[in-house]
Image (cartoon, rainbow over all chains, first blue to last red):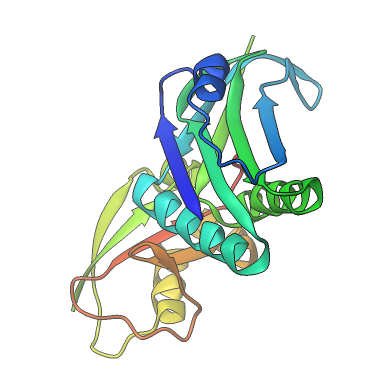
Length: 130
Length: 81
């Protein structure tokens, strides 16, 4: 399974990521997910979220999650981009793509990846209040 | 043994530092170090049960025996996405 991880303060360019997609002819499913910063955090209006990442450990934990996905489902590739630093409301902080032969494993793997990230990958957010 | 302790997210705010040097006895476990850290920073004691702990870039439990030069991280539940 190919795995590509980007942790960066740079904006996530969804169009460029889609354009860079590379799949073999046996693949029939491409699942993508974008997590976007909402304008409210609980009751409070916010202008964005400041993401702090323990980069080295985040990379290690993502590698472990990718390895688990490879063990569980026949996935051709996973790409994940997570922003660090300040991300404004309506901008994506997270982008995930899973490519597989069939949709079931692609959806399962995508959900698993995001669920595991939220439990294990050391990234924290600090809302920026208006 | 000399250790480096790193605090992440709001733990850095409540301790007033991101990195701290600790000197502990040979054979000290991660749980025992956590006790020492909580004694020095009572606000971290309040969050003790939800605190996540890593040595280097891997999660470890309280029974993990530390080694000289280890870099230990304490942090609250993660919030990626």
